[in-house]
Figure 1 (spheres, helix red, strand yellow):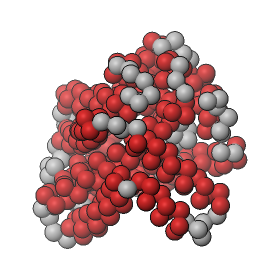
Figure 2 (cartoon, one colour; figure 1 turned 120 degrees about the vertical axis):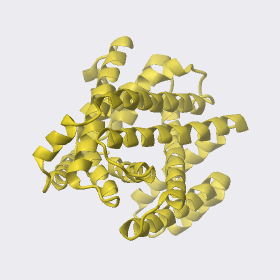
Figure 3 (cartoon, one colour; figure 1 turned 180 degrees about the horizontal axis):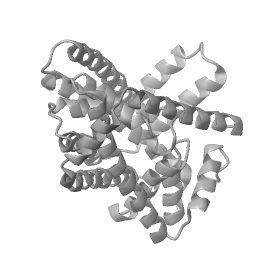
Figure 4 (tube, helix red, strand yellow; figure 1 turned 120 degrees about the horizontal axis):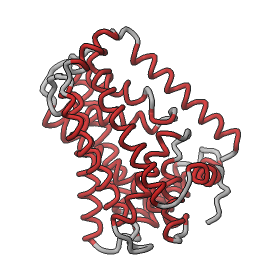
Length: 338
């Protein structure tokens, strides 16, 4: 990636965050938010942080399994990289967290960065599979209202089913899928086509590295369970503000927030998380002020917990933030040494 492209992505991220924040606070009553927090069950912050911690622990367990073809590490050896990467998304622009945790793990355990990056591609595949599966199940079993929500439910369910079919075909027949994508992408620019095919090749190579069924079972279980933990975090945030919505609301927040965080954004996903809560809860009759209050309850605790944990582990692994940023930025520009 060129410096010009990277600057454009950073500027686009800040612009989108500002737009989402504007849309989130438009028409919101500050007094209503103050009143909501004054009456909130703040003690629910403890189970929220516990569930959030479990989310990252499961993420570390899954990454350890994905790394088995490369090296054999303990979960406690992988966990610091996970937290440092998550913290980096809170303080650095351009979503550098994935590259940061790759760099930290490679430096700590003397691993090849390219090999680690292959596991991240596979992570994205299983994350997407788990999320669309959970959302689809929630829609089929949890849509208990009529009107707008039902229409969104069918739309998301259709998208989820389509995504599952496509990804399922790739998992079962990676070589045939690769040939099919190569044929249908002829109309794309050569450079874009090469990038797409490269990502598919890396993912196919990563899939072939899962040699044992027990590894695959562990990856699937941790992928699904970690996102259930995230839904629990969302529901705790909603209940802390005394908002009564069914469990399906948590999955709707998950759906919108995952889409949101894939877009360019300012560090910490400011504005993105808030707007995701508002969009998801609107279908359940929750006003913008109440939805924003729940989002802030979640987001502030999330940001503080991740940032403090990341700073703690940076000190533990004897690295500094400026070094991590400069090396990861080099990776973003394609200059990191393998």
